Image (cartoon, rainbow over all chains, first blue to last red; front, side):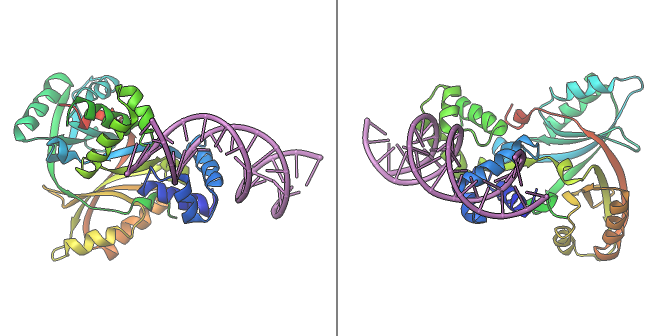
Length: 149
Length: 149
DNA sequence: CTTGAAAATCGCTTTAC
DNA sequence: GTAAAGCGATTTTCAAG
């Protein structure tokens, strides 16, 4: 993966629907060559896919939270993770070390909905303790940081 | 935004480079109609863009952490956020309520690099306290959850 | 529906090892 | 001598008026 591949990745991070011709113009290669490189990056697993990025607020989810979660004794992690998939307000989840077992990223319409999510996590998913904080804003960071040294 | 728009969004969440013909096949509309709808979703701000999704491990960043951060008294938040952009290991950042000021998402190659990031945050960015936990894994969640009720 | 643009495929050339 | 990158020509597919 050379410098040109990195440039292509940066361009595709900003516009995943860019045409090969446009990409070629930017890196001064033919569209064919660019297409070959991009296909190689895909089959090598460097590019995992292309996703539309949506505006969460268009769906009324104005309230975001980070919730640290501890499971009750004996609750199966696998089952918990699977059931998380059925809770649409959970937009992200990671298992972590430390005081808590998981950190959840929630997106709710309002506190009413947040309340029902809390109750559901405790009643149905085996959550013992939940410690949440409101997300005030996300800090905008450059997309190409993953590529840099 | 009707049911078909939601279907289109779901399809584009999974493959942001899908052609209008392919989308049309899935929702049983002509490519033209689909293109019109997608363009409208873009100009309405529902679709914010299209991004390639990269495999972080291809770049050697095998170690991820969540770090809660508290700033020293008098440190300017704006300046802090701007300087975060210069630290490539910071792949995500949110300002939050509660005991800490920010939560950072870090991606490092190894503990050596993590150590230098800690020192840099404290020495250059005005961080007073840092509380980190290792990310063991991300829980895979369906992409279309943002769209659902 | 039509037209110009873009993508995929093929084969050829050049370069590096 | 082989492998890989680049490019041009052609056919098929796609986008947009």
